[in-house]
Amino acid sequence: MALNLNKNLKLYYSIKEVADMFGLNESTLRYWETEFPYLKPKTSGPAKIRQYQEKDIEQIRLIHNLVKVRGFKLAAAKKIINSNRDGADKRAEVLTRLLSVRDDLQALKKQMDYLQ
Image: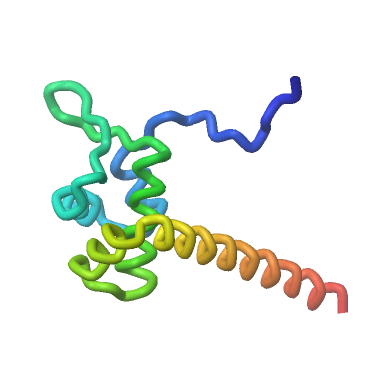
């Protein structure tokens, strides 16, 4: 059995880590939790410290794509997610892949320019 080096070993992320991933304020994530009922991170202890799992981060990625990247209002984002969740998920995934490819191509171009 081969070791999967690509697997993320971290199970829980703090609200600060997740906010930094997306370039958001922590208060924005808290607000989105009130607006999108399916976005409910695990809370622990009497202080109710939020612990985000990968499934929560995927939800945030979808909301971020609709609201911050594509410019939809929260009401429109809710409507899109509720009416066509699979389509919205796939579009967010495609956008993420395209951005990754763009970054790779830009890095390759820099290397090519350096060789000339």
